[in-house]
Length: 256
Image (tube, rainbow, N blue to C red; front, side):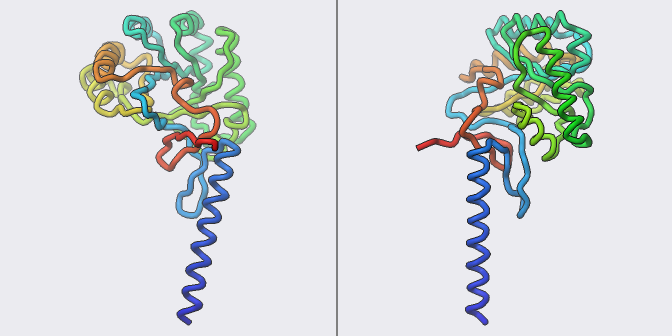
C-alpha cells in the first residue's frame, strides 16, 4: 500500500515536471504568453520587463479629448523623452492632427482597439476586425506599421491574446497605474508613479486626465534624477526568445 502511494506520488511529480517542460518549450518556440494557474495554462500579456538597466516606459491611452495633449507633448519634448501612445480608432480619425504631432514628436503609437469595448466578450473574427480597423486608421496617417496593442479597460482572455499574437501584435498592459483618470491631484499622480516604478516598468497614463499634464514633468524629472531612462514600449520589450511569468513580467530566454 505504501509502495503504491509512493509510486503514484512519484508518477504525479514526473507528469507535472513533464507538463511544465512542454509548456516552457511552447513559450520559448512560439512566443505564447503561457503560464500555469493551477493545472490550467493561461495566456498573459506583458505587464513589465525584466531589465538590468534602469529603463522604463511611460504610456498614454487616447480615447477622449485632446485638451491637455499639447502640454503633455511639450513636457516630453523638454525632457527629451519618447513615450508610447495607444489610440482608439474613433480618436485617431477625429484628431489626425494630434496623431501627426505625436509621431513628429518621436513617440510610438499602438492601437487601443477600434471601439473601446470589452474585447474578452468578442470572438476571434470580431477581434481581428477591431485590430485591423484601428491599426489601418493609424497607419494611414503615420505610414508606420502598428505592432503594439493595449486592450481597453485592461480586459483580456486567452482568445484575445492568442488572436492578437497571430495578427502580429504584442499585447501590453502596465505595472504602474497612475489612476489619473480619477482626477487625482498632480502631486498624488506623480507620487503613485515614482514610488511604483522599478527597472522595466510600464506606466499607465491618459492623454486627457484632468491633472495628467501637470504631473508628467514631475514624474519625468524625478525618475531621471533617480537614474532612470525612458524608452518607448517597443524598445523596452523583447520581441523574440522570451517568456512571461505569472505576474506578466517578460524575461529574455538565453540561447546557448
